[in-house]
Length: 171
Image 1 (cartoon, rainbow, N blue to C red):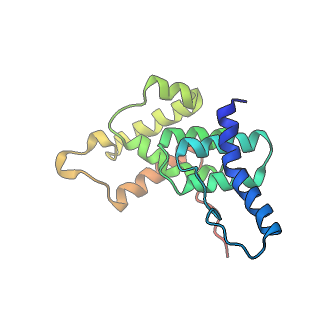
Image 2: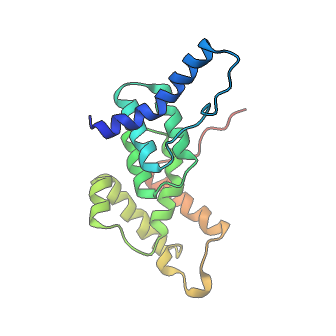
């Protein structure tokens, strides 16, 4: 365990502990730090997920994942993180859609990071997207941007190739 990683975890936990102690000691006092959190970046929240998972702090891990869900996370980074911690696969559909439709292919480093299996699936999905004319390289300058129809096609490709489905609907 790196000290900096563990320190990041403590920065999240410690203020909560201090505040709960202060409120039990001084119930009528007001504290300006209530609810404050100095953790703001994707990298910091990723460290929190890692440390909380390592120390089996499930509630804290879930909280950190919820914070990441509210932020923009690079699609490759999100795929790696979600796969590493066995998070819901359906949440990766937009990431895969972005990757298979971007003009540039996957770099060697990205392929290494996501693993051979995922790389082959991405390559297959990119090939299907190219054949259907919905990849980034197929768009001319007049056709920039995406439509709902293109998104639907990309979503179907991702679901088929990666075996993903939409989240279950709650009654």
